[in-house]
Length: 133
Image 1 (cartoon, rainbow, N blue to C red):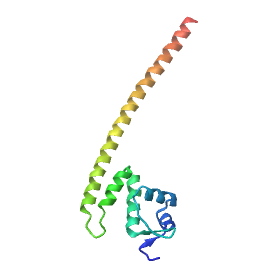
Image 2: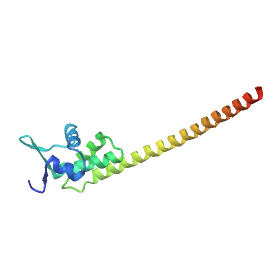
Image 3: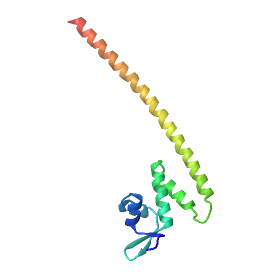
Image 4: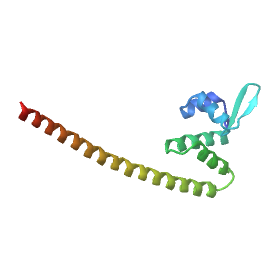
């Protein structure tokens, strides 16, 4: 095999993922290896696509978003459209995370308030119980 093609086990080992994960991405149409009999032969483009999928997953992109970025990839071009699209998606993801952080902080405040009310009610209950004894 030349250095520009990879077996499924080569890619799995090199990118530290399972062959099952690679087959899943293939089933989803994100990878398109050649076939030699039963053997899958992955290209350098497949490897780049797989790296993009893994990076996208780490930063919270959906498979549909990964697919869109892969479709914009042009190994012969400067990939400006792909890079601009990725920057837009990064901005969207950052905004989602900032909103989630605000939501979490609001929920923490609500939990603090509920906890204070419970502790106060318990304290009143204990005090009232001692008075009636």
